[in-house]
Image (cartoon, rainbow, N blue to C red; front, side, top):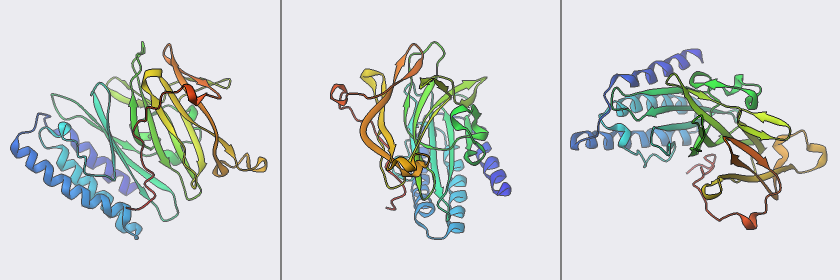
Length: 292
């Protein structure tokens, strides 16, 4: 496993060698060709029944992505026909996050990704190395890109804070019994990414990120209402009182909670009246466990 991890780090580190420019007709043709190849490899690491072959397809995907992002103007190219990965731009277009997962035979997930900066100089990209298995208390943890609490993000929020930060909403397949969703924070310290920040207030606790865990058979809503500066989500409860210590038994209970942005922080609100919430739906990541 360490050998594979070092190979991924080496490949993704190669991103910093190319200049970032607007693409011309030649670059556009190259990027379209790369996108077609990436799309094929993406289907393999999702749908192939053999784990070693899925893993090989993942590594081949990384190699191809390295070549694609070395192409001048790659930041402007959306790669939007590759449906097996999530690509989300920051509201200020300062960066974009690419992330994807691979399902292991034991039902667990391995996450891969990178942050590509919108740079007029050399191409800047930070590989994201999934360290989820080594993070025992994710809501208390501050991490960097080398110890990332892996997820596939579908929304980046940029609140107007005195200390600028980005709030991320993400899907995180966990195992065969439970699924997770995550509200995380991304900042840049000395130009390098940092995940987690003590900005979530509620229930007599301050969190660096918020993690929801629930039954893999259930579906949980987590979305942002921009006009209200409000993150809303299904309140989760156990199927029975005796399973309250088993997150894999949890599911939506037809009530709703949220985090409202106030003076630089996200403040927990319980028992939201959804009749007063605008019906503005953000894009959410479709559960990738369902094979296409």
